[in-house]
Length: 328
Image 1 (cartoon, rainbow, N blue to C red):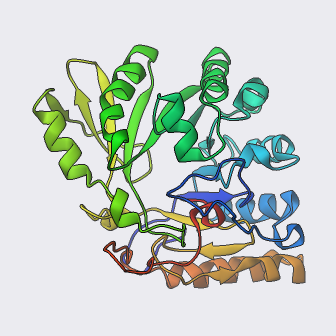
Image 2 (image 1 turned 120 degrees about the vertical axis):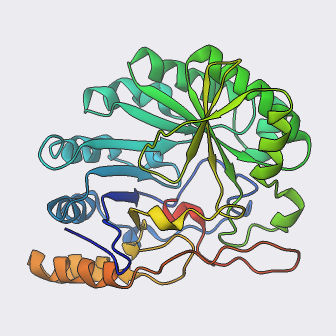
Image 3 (image 1 turned 90 degrees about the vertical axis):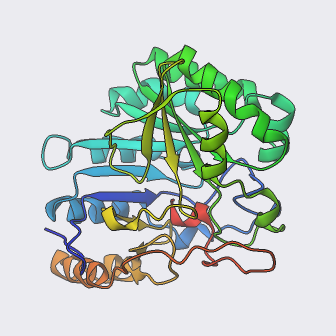
Protein backbone atom coordinates (compact mmCIF):
# COMPACT_ATOMS: atom_id res chain seq x y z
CA UNK A 1 0.00 0.00 0.00
CA UNK A 2 1.07 3.55 -0.74
CA UNK A 3 0.85 5.78 2.34
CA UNK A 4 2.36 9.28 2.45
CA UNK A 5 4.33 10.78 5.37
CA UNK A 6 1.11 12.13 6.88
CA UNK A 7 -0.60 8.71 7.05
CA UNK A 8 -2.82 9.40 4.02
CA UNK A 9 -3.39 6.29 1.86
CA UNK A 10 -2.96 6.99 -1.85
CA UNK A 11 -5.86 5.30 -3.64
CA UNK A 12 -6.48 7.67 -6.57
CA UNK A 13 -4.33 8.30 -9.65
CA UNK A 14 -5.05 11.00 -12.21
CA UNK A 15 -3.23 10.67 -15.54
CA UNK A 16 -2.89 13.37 -18.18
CA UNK A 17 -2.76 11.37 -21.40
CA UNK A 18 -1.96 14.50 -23.44
CA UNK A 19 -1.30 18.15 -22.73
CA UNK A 20 -2.99 19.11 -26.01
CA UNK A 21 -6.48 20.54 -26.10
CA UNK A 22 -8.78 21.80 -28.82
CA UNK A 23 -9.92 24.65 -26.53
CA UNK A 24 -7.82 27.48 -25.11
CA UNK A 25 -9.77 28.32 -21.97
CA UNK A 26 -8.74 31.72 -20.65
CA UNK A 27 -8.12 30.54 -17.08
CA UNK A 28 -6.18 27.44 -18.17
CA UNK A 29 -3.66 28.44 -20.84
CA UNK A 30 -2.56 31.28 -23.13
CA UNK A 31 -4.09 31.43 -26.59
CA UNK A 32 -0.73 30.65 -28.23
CA UNK A 33 0.00 27.66 -26.03
CA UNK A 34 3.16 25.62 -26.61
CA UNK A 35 2.62 21.91 -26.11
CA UNK A 36 5.22 19.25 -25.38
CA UNK A 37 6.83 17.55 -28.39
CA UNK A 38 5.09 14.23 -29.02
CA UNK A 39 8.17 12.06 -28.32
CA UNK A 40 8.20 13.47 -24.79
CA UNK A 41 4.69 12.17 -24.07
CA UNK A 42 4.25 8.80 -22.43
CA UNK A 43 3.12 6.15 -24.88
CA UNK A 44 -0.14 4.30 -24.18
CA UNK A 45 1.89 1.22 -23.22
CA UNK A 46 3.94 3.28 -20.75
CA UNK A 47 0.79 4.75 -19.25
CA UNK A 48 -0.73 1.28 -18.84
CA UNK A 49 2.44 -0.06 -17.23
CA UNK A 50 2.63 2.85 -14.79
CA UNK A 51 -1.07 2.53 -13.94
CA UNK A 52 -0.68 -1.20 -13.32
CA UNK A 53 2.14 -0.49 -10.87
CA UNK A 54 -0.10 1.89 -8.92
CA UNK A 55 -2.99 -0.58 -8.91
CA UNK A 56 -0.70 -3.24 -7.48
CA UNK A 57 0.08 -0.80 -4.67
CA UNK A 58 -3.53 -0.07 -3.73
CA UNK A 59 -4.82 2.58 -6.16
CA UNK A 60 -8.55 1.90 -6.62
CA UNK A 61 -9.60 4.81 -8.83
CA UNK A 62 -8.04 5.97 -12.09
CA UNK A 63 -9.04 9.11 -13.96
CA UNK A 64 -7.78 10.07 -17.43
CA UNK A 65 -7.40 13.80 -17.96
CA UNK A 66 -5.56 16.25 -20.14
CA UNK A 67 -5.51 18.55 -21.99
CA UNK A 68 -8.39 16.91 -23.72
CA UNK A 69 -7.97 13.13 -23.25
CA UNK A 70 -10.25 12.25 -26.18
CA UNK A 71 -7.90 14.21 -28.47
CA UNK A 72 -5.16 11.63 -27.85
CA UNK A 73 -4.79 9.23 -30.75
CA UNK A 74 -5.51 5.68 -29.63
CA UNK A 75 -7.09 6.75 -26.35
CA UNK A 76 -9.91 4.20 -26.66
CA UNK A 77 -7.38 1.39 -26.96
CA UNK A 78 -5.76 2.73 -23.79
CA UNK A 79 -9.14 2.80 -22.02
CA UNK A 80 -9.76 -0.81 -23.04
CA UNK A 81 -6.33 -1.86 -21.80
CA UNK A 82 -6.85 -0.13 -18.46
CA UNK A 83 -10.37 -1.53 -18.08
CA UNK A 84 -8.87 -5.02 -17.76
CA UNK A 85 -7.92 -3.99 -14.22
CA UNK A 86 -11.55 -3.32 -13.23
CA UNK A 87 -12.53 -5.84 -10.61
CA UNK A 88 -8.88 -6.85 -10.27
CA UNK A 89 -7.80 -4.14 -7.88
CA UNK A 90 -9.32 -1.20 -9.73
CA UNK A 91 -12.81 -0.09 -8.69
CA UNK A 92 -13.36 2.73 -11.17
CA UNK A 93 -11.99 4.01 -14.46
CA UNK A 94 -13.24 7.42 -15.51
CA UNK A 95 -12.19 10.58 -17.30
CA UNK A 96 -12.63 14.34 -17.42
CA UNK A 97 -13.36 15.85 -20.84
CA UNK A 98 -14.36 19.15 -22.39
CA UNK A 99 -17.05 17.26 -24.29
CA UNK A 100 -16.02 18.36 -27.77
CA UNK A 101 -15.45 14.77 -28.99
CA UNK A 102 -17.81 13.01 -26.63
CA UNK A 103 -20.58 12.45 -29.17
CA UNK A 104 -18.20 10.27 -31.19
CA UNK A 105 -16.71 8.32 -28.27
CA UNK A 106 -19.42 8.04 -25.61
CA UNK A 107 -20.73 4.61 -26.62
CA UNK A 108 -17.22 3.14 -26.91
CA UNK A 109 -16.29 4.49 -23.47
CA UNK A 110 -19.34 2.86 -21.95
CA UNK A 111 -18.57 -0.41 -23.72
CA UNK A 112 -15.02 -0.30 -22.30
CA UNK A 113 -16.25 -0.15 -18.71
CA UNK A 114 -16.41 3.58 -18.02
CA UNK A 115 -19.51 4.30 -15.96
CA UNK A 116 -19.29 8.01 -15.23
CA UNK A 117 -17.46 11.03 -16.57
CA UNK A 118 -16.86 14.66 -15.71
CA UNK A 119 -17.53 17.29 -18.37
CA UNK A 120 -16.07 20.78 -18.05
CA UNK A 121 -18.79 23.32 -18.87
CA UNK A 122 -18.60 26.83 -17.43
CA UNK A 123 -21.67 28.43 -18.99
CA UNK A 124 -24.76 27.70 -21.09
CA UNK A 125 -24.50 31.00 -22.94
CA UNK A 126 -23.05 30.32 -26.44
CA UNK A 127 -21.29 33.69 -26.73
CA UNK A 128 -19.75 33.48 -23.28
CA UNK A 129 -18.75 29.86 -23.92
CA UNK A 130 -16.97 30.90 -27.11
CA UNK A 131 -15.21 33.74 -25.28
CA UNK A 132 -14.03 31.55 -22.39
CA UNK A 133 -12.85 28.65 -24.57
CA UNK A 134 -11.65 30.96 -27.39
CA UNK A 135 -12.68 28.36 -29.99
CA UNK A 136 -15.30 26.02 -28.52
CA UNK A 137 -18.80 25.29 -29.87
CA UNK A 138 -21.37 24.95 -27.07
CA UNK A 139 -23.80 22.93 -29.20
CA UNK A 140 -21.08 20.35 -29.86
CA UNK A 141 -20.49 19.91 -26.14
CA UNK A 142 -24.21 19.65 -25.36
CA UNK A 143 -24.56 17.01 -28.09
CA UNK A 144 -21.70 15.11 -26.48
CA UNK A 145 -23.34 15.24 -23.07
CA UNK A 146 -26.58 13.97 -24.57
CA UNK A 147 -24.70 11.12 -26.27
CA UNK A 148 -23.03 10.20 -22.98
CA UNK A 149 -26.36 10.06 -21.23
CA UNK A 150 -27.83 7.95 -24.05
CA UNK A 151 -24.88 5.55 -23.68
CA UNK A 152 -25.69 5.09 -20.00
CA UNK A 153 -22.84 7.21 -18.62
CA UNK A 154 -23.44 9.28 -15.52
CA UNK A 155 -22.33 12.86 -16.15
CA UNK A 156 -21.06 15.36 -13.60
CA UNK A 157 -20.60 18.92 -14.79
CA UNK A 158 -17.54 20.87 -13.62
CA UNK A 159 -17.69 24.67 -13.84
CA UNK A 160 -14.95 27.12 -12.92
CA UNK A 161 -16.43 30.04 -11.01
CA UNK A 162 -15.44 33.28 -12.72
CA UNK A 163 -16.05 36.85 -11.65
CA UNK A 164 -17.93 38.96 -14.18
CA UNK A 165 -20.78 38.19 -16.52
CA UNK A 166 -20.38 34.45 -15.90
CA UNK A 167 -21.57 34.91 -12.31
CA UNK A 168 -25.10 35.36 -13.63
CA UNK A 169 -24.82 32.01 -15.38
CA UNK A 170 -24.36 29.90 -12.24
CA UNK A 171 -28.03 29.64 -11.36
CA UNK A 172 -29.14 28.76 -14.95
CA UNK A 173 -26.43 26.09 -14.99
CA UNK A 174 -27.72 24.73 -11.68
CA UNK A 175 -31.28 24.58 -12.98
CA UNK A 176 -30.20 22.90 -16.21
CA UNK A 177 -28.14 20.28 -14.38
CA UNK A 178 -31.07 19.55 -12.07
CA UNK A 179 -33.43 19.15 -15.00
CA UNK A 180 -31.00 16.90 -16.88
CA UNK A 181 -30.10 14.77 -13.86
CA UNK A 182 -26.45 15.84 -13.64
CA UNK A 183 -24.51 16.71 -10.51
CA UNK A 184 -22.72 20.06 -10.67
CA UNK A 185 -19.39 21.00 -9.08
CA UNK A 186 -18.17 24.57 -8.88
CA UNK A 187 -14.39 25.08 -8.78
CA UNK A 188 -12.29 28.06 -7.77
CA UNK A 189 -9.74 29.07 -10.37
CA UNK A 190 -6.35 27.46 -9.71
CA UNK A 191 -3.17 29.51 -10.25
CA UNK A 192 -1.26 27.04 -12.42
CA UNK A 193 0.92 28.35 -15.25
CA UNK A 194 0.93 31.74 -16.96
CA UNK A 195 -2.24 32.39 -18.97
CA UNK A 196 -1.61 35.88 -20.34
CA UNK A 197 -3.78 37.71 -17.80
CA UNK A 198 -3.94 38.30 -14.04
CA UNK A 199 -6.27 35.64 -12.64
CA UNK A 200 -7.08 37.98 -9.74
CA UNK A 201 -9.41 39.94 -12.03
CA UNK A 202 -11.56 36.85 -12.57
CA UNK A 203 -11.17 35.09 -9.22
CA UNK A 204 -14.51 34.42 -7.57
CA UNK A 205 -14.31 32.90 -4.06
CA UNK A 206 -16.83 30.12 -3.62
CA UNK A 207 -17.56 31.40 -0.14
CA UNK A 208 -19.14 34.40 -1.89
CA UNK A 209 -21.06 32.16 -4.28
CA UNK A 210 -22.35 29.98 -1.47
CA UNK A 211 -23.50 32.98 0.54
CA UNK A 212 -25.41 34.36 -2.43
CA UNK A 213 -27.03 31.02 -3.17
CA UNK A 214 -28.05 30.64 0.48
CA UNK A 215 -30.17 33.80 0.08
CA UNK A 216 -32.24 32.05 -2.60
CA UNK A 217 -32.03 28.34 -1.86
CA UNK A 218 -31.98 25.97 1.08
CA UNK A 219 -28.50 24.41 1.09
CA UNK A 220 -28.17 21.21 3.09
CA UNK A 221 -24.67 19.76 3.71
CA UNK A 222 -24.25 16.20 2.45
CA UNK A 223 -21.77 13.58 3.68
CA UNK A 224 -21.19 12.35 0.10
CA UNK A 225 -17.65 11.85 -1.18
CA UNK A 226 -16.65 10.83 -4.71
CA UNK A 227 -12.92 10.35 -4.15
CA UNK A 228 -11.90 13.94 -4.87
CA UNK A 229 -11.79 17.22 -2.90
CA UNK A 230 -15.39 18.31 -3.58
CA UNK A 231 -17.70 18.90 -0.64
CA UNK A 232 -21.37 18.54 -1.50
CA UNK A 233 -24.62 20.23 -0.60
CA UNK A 234 -28.19 19.46 -1.57
CA UNK A 235 -30.01 22.36 -3.19
CA UNK A 236 -33.38 21.35 -1.83
CA UNK A 237 -35.59 23.38 -4.17
CA UNK A 238 -33.89 21.87 -7.23
CA UNK A 239 -33.06 18.40 -5.95
CA UNK A 240 -29.49 19.14 -7.13
CA UNK A 241 -26.29 17.78 -5.63
CA UNK A 242 -23.94 20.75 -5.78
CA UNK A 243 -20.22 20.36 -5.11
CA UNK A 244 -17.63 22.98 -4.13
CA UNK A 245 -13.89 22.62 -4.76
CA UNK A 246 -12.10 25.37 -2.85
CA UNK A 247 -8.30 25.30 -3.22
CA UNK A 248 -8.03 28.94 -2.15
CA UNK A 249 -10.76 29.66 0.40
CA UNK A 250 -10.99 26.32 2.26
CA UNK A 251 -7.94 24.06 2.24
CA UNK A 252 -8.85 20.42 1.55
CA UNK A 253 -5.41 18.84 1.84
CA UNK A 254 -5.94 16.90 5.07
CA UNK A 255 -7.84 14.17 3.26
CA UNK A 256 -5.79 14.09 0.07
CA UNK A 257 -5.68 10.59 -1.41
CA UNK A 258 -4.38 11.32 -4.91
CA UNK A 259 -1.31 11.86 -7.04
CA UNK A 260 -0.97 12.87 -10.68
CA UNK A 261 1.02 11.56 -13.60
CA UNK A 262 1.71 14.26 -16.18
CA UNK A 263 1.56 13.77 -19.93
CA UNK A 264 5.37 13.69 -20.00
CA UNK A 265 5.70 11.15 -17.19
CA UNK A 266 6.34 13.32 -14.15
CA UNK A 267 4.72 11.91 -11.01
CA UNK A 268 3.36 14.93 -9.14
CA UNK A 269 2.48 14.21 -5.50
CA UNK A 270 0.74 17.58 -5.04
CA UNK A 271 -0.98 19.75 -7.64
CA UNK A 272 0.16 22.88 -5.82
CA UNK A 273 3.90 22.13 -5.80
CA UNK A 274 6.54 22.17 -8.52
CA UNK A 275 8.22 19.00 -7.29
CA UNK A 276 7.84 15.76 -9.21
CA UNK A 277 9.54 12.46 -9.95
CA UNK A 278 10.56 11.45 -13.46
CA UNK A 279 8.88 8.11 -14.17
CA UNK A 280 9.35 8.37 -17.93
CA UNK A 281 13.09 7.81 -17.65
CA UNK A 282 12.52 4.79 -15.42
CA UNK A 283 9.87 3.35 -17.76
CA UNK A 284 12.16 3.71 -20.75
CA UNK A 285 15.35 2.56 -19.04
CA UNK A 286 14.24 -0.86 -17.84
CA UNK A 287 11.43 -3.40 -17.99
CA UNK A 288 12.10 -4.31 -14.37
CA UNK A 289 9.09 -3.10 -12.38
CA UNK A 290 11.11 -3.10 -9.18
CA UNK A 291 12.78 0.12 -10.32
CA UNK A 292 9.38 1.60 -11.15
CA UNK A 293 7.99 0.59 -7.76
CA UNK A 294 11.00 2.14 -6.02
CA UNK A 295 10.56 5.44 -7.89
CA UNK A 296 6.85 5.55 -7.05
CA UNK A 297 7.56 4.79 -3.39
CA UNK A 298 10.15 7.56 -3.20
CA UNK A 299 7.72 10.06 -4.74
CA UNK A 300 4.97 9.20 -2.27
CA UNK A 301 7.45 9.51 0.60
CA UNK A 302 8.08 13.10 -0.54
CA UNK A 303 4.41 14.10 -0.80
CA UNK A 304 3.98 17.45 1.01
CA UNK A 305 1.33 18.13 3.61
CA UNK A 306 -0.50 20.74 1.52
CA UNK A 307 -0.48 22.88 -1.57
CA UNK A 308 1.02 26.36 -1.99
CA UNK A 309 -1.74 28.01 -4.02
CA UNK A 310 -1.98 31.77 -3.69
CA UNK A 311 -3.64 34.46 -5.72
CA UNK A 312 -3.21 38.21 -5.69
CA UNK A 313 -2.45 41.04 -8.04
CA UNK A 314 1.06 40.74 -9.38
CA UNK A 315 1.73 37.33 -7.83
CA UNK A 316 3.25 34.72 -10.11
CA UNK A 317 1.43 31.36 -10.21
CA UNK A 318 2.44 29.00 -7.42
CA UNK A 319 3.29 26.42 -10.09
CA UNK A 320 4.70 27.16 -13.56
CA UNK A 321 3.29 23.93 -15.00
CA UNK A 322 -0.06 24.36 -16.76
CA UNK A 323 -3.11 22.35 -15.68
CA UNK A 324 -3.27 20.65 -19.08
CA UNK A 325 0.17 19.12 -18.59
CA UNK A 326 -0.48 18.17 -14.98
CA UNK A 327 -3.83 16.52 -15.48
CA UNK A 328 -5.63 18.37 -12.71
